[in-house]
Amino acid sequence: QVQLVESGGGLVQAGGSLRLSCAASRRTFSKYAMGWFRQAPGKEREFVAAISWSGGSTYYADSVKGRFTISRDNAKNTVYLQMNSLKPEDTAVYYCAAAPAPSGSYYYTVGYEYAYWGQGTQVTVSS
Image (cartoon, rainbow, N blue to C red; front, side):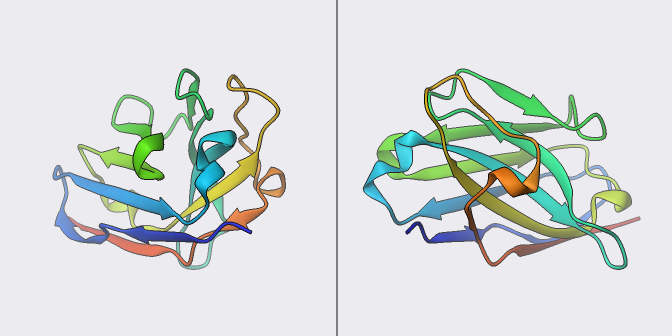
C-alpha cells in the first residue's frame, strides 16, 4: 500500500508559477513510476506528466510541454510538478499517482496503469 499526499496548490495569476509536491509513504517509492493527472470541473481526468522511478525518463501532455517539469527525489519519497507560465485553462484538481514498474525506464500515461492515487490539490489560475 502506498499513501500519497499532494500539497502546493493554490490561487495564482496567469503567467505565474506553482510547485506541487507529492509525498509517498512507502519506503520502496523508488520502485514506482509516478504521474500527475488533473481534472477540471465538468471534464474528464487527463494525463499531465509522468516520470520513471529512476527519474531518467519523463513524458508530458502536449498542453503542458515546455511549461511544466516533473521531477522526483527518491531520498525524500517525493515527486514534484513545477508549473510555470500558468494559464486559466490549467485550473483543475491535480492528482499524483504511483504505479509499480518493472524497471527504471518505465513510465505510464494512462490512469488505469496507476495503482495508488492521492486526494488531490486544487490549482486555480485567474486571468
